[in-house]
Length: 70
Image (tube, rainbow, N blue to C red; front, side, top):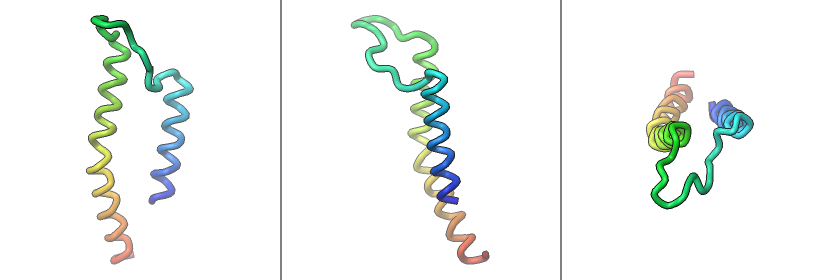
């Protein structure tokens, strides 16, 4: 299960940067509003960051259950 998570993470990063959705530095000048694309990417990154903790907990429970019950 850990190997699958690692592989998905690596593939995800490759796809994101290949498509051009990676983190952008210097989105605009002072007072410039970021575009819709930048706002959506920021939302996706924020949700991914917040969901890491519950995902770690769920994966840990799954691994314990698999070890106990096979």
